[in-house]
Image 1 (cartoon, rainbow, N blue to C red):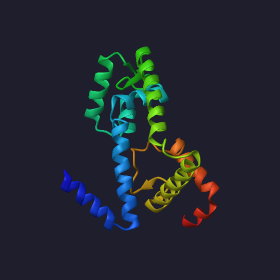
Image 2: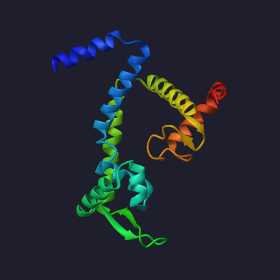
Image 3: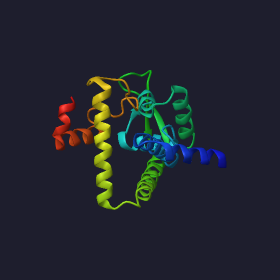
Length: 189
């Protein structure tokens, strides 16, 4: 373990600025995934159902960005725990809609409160001004990568999270807000 840490420290010390940024982003990504129990967690399912209301299992699977078998297992566990219910889809009886039970909604509210607390703790070392600067820089990088990686609006080399960052999402709106506020980025398009 010590040798591994020593190697990582030496690698970081010898890295250029771009490498150090990537190393830090990778480390932060791992920490965020750990803090939020990953993309295919029961907590995440409850959050999505609270946010969206009724949703088909196929939509949930796409939203989570996981395999259908993993999604089925999550749904079965949550249904068995009394957190969600399945009901036939009115448009297509072969599909099932998923929704929160009363117990599921209570748990989702609890999860939401814990998520907010974790997010506050994650950035507690930053002042409000520093958070705004960090947000602006991250939006600038995200926007730049989006412009670079997309041939046109619907075809990107890296779509990220199975389409959950679509045209009307908050994520997309933040990019649009950034683009409008920093029109000099328009020259990249």
